[in-house]
Length: 383
Image (cartoon, rainbow, N blue to C red; front, side, top):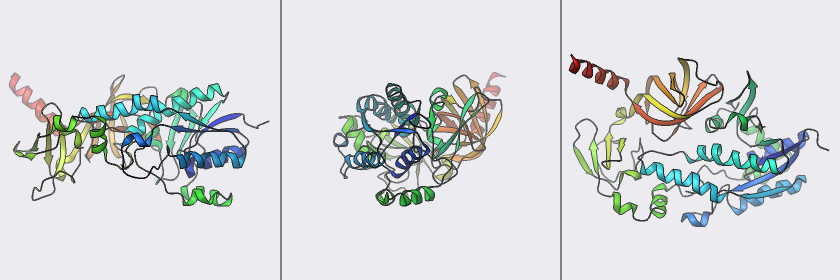
């Protein structure tokens, strides 16, 4: 009989999820391993060798850990639900002129839901993953907080997990550093996990060529959107022709296909006119944004106004900001300094210390000075 009951562990075949399963097994849980196949690599049309969480090697690596420790392991095929939700959203966001974040979407809307449904069928009280983050229960709320390893912290990608899901989730790695995980693997004889390379690519774009993926996924798109104009930020002058607005992202400098005599960056994407606006580096700065489709964790609603550190992408250190919840599903963010390359479609996550207050999707960014100037203009015109 197990000491703590039955738990379903998401196992990608990598060192982190494998050691999460090992630790829970050693603690006395009755572990069941599950590897989720989200994508059929062959259908992506990529040119590189199959790697990552959906590869046959990764599935076999996860199964070998389970066999060695004597607990069951299953493969869960969620390719249909993954494709319908994550990949359709991915392509749809680019067509809207936004920059999607499929990994956050997959974590919060596919993997957790899929795991919990199978956990119920297998009579598991809890699920577990190898994310570097922590969970605690406080004031009737389940709160995600940063992992102790700042270089590996993954709290940003977990902002969308619901309270109900968090109540049944264990994150055994949150109090450990990556170096400690590697040492634990060595001590237990899992040397192949220590030497295994880690993949940071989007699983269905394994060659990191999202443009190629869009072209293969949406035949005829390239011809439909080609020939739009590059527009200069301040003058509105046409600088040249581009390949089509879906093939560019905010902050992009390389791959513009033209020389401008100085570094130029994508500062805005105008879907309706197929225009891509270019400016110099400081033109990327914005000090305000609107965030929608919220999921709050630490509070049921945001105490207003609230000082936070807000991250606008995974590798962003975060910037101090004042946030106000202006509607049930909308937060207005005012940064205390300019933030570069805020991309609509990416996730914004709000922190209070190490705690995740919640997050949402960036709808638009703006310069507060522009807002003031517009307000003054409207006031003058009405007098």
